[in-house]
Length: 310
Image (cartoon, rainbow, N blue to C red; front, side, top):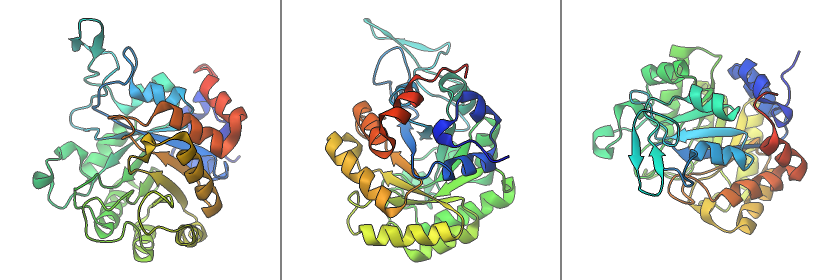
């Protein structure tokens, strides 16, 4: 029996999905899946809840934690023994919170970024955020439903480095976990954000999906090029994640709607919206606008309203 379309899946369905089932569920949704990225250590935009919960409430199907440290789990906004007294409110620091707890609270698949930084000391990135097989194992043990091998700004991450990391991680953890790979911007490297060579290398390495910046988010990625690369990725049986990762997640809803329709024409499977609208999360109304643009109010409201008991 094939996996239920993610478009119609509920919390109980997600609990039963492994990486292969999640991949098929996304594929069967025909370009109507929304992934919202949140910066793991950023303070919540709204007091009393986490940014992951806020993004889910706006219609996100998948939550992607950026900057999550598998050696020091923490997601502010979730209950923990450590709290900050702000006078007019209290901020739960979320020390010890793992992807498994986030998933239990929001009822959606939760993933995290790992980065193959060539010089992690210079980039000041914690060891627990690097794209190593050990960290990938820890992430899965802590409940991550999927991994994204990518690079944050000015890290120097390259397409070649991403492909090498995917190959090493895939060899270590096997074929079941869902792995997406690629960049949303140049990440400080002197190379194109995406190329045919990168796509071939990431496919060969075992990535289940490739990131392509949505046309209009980075210079030089045209609609024609995005469609060509998407067709190649689909021929290999892989997914395409179209990304908004250049702070346009803080643009007007009309910009988000335009990017969404461009991605639809190109053939994107997953629509990603980044974490830099505010510091740590996209404008909530833009998460909603993206959801409505790619699948209408009916599916958006179902995702927003569905109980964790379903």
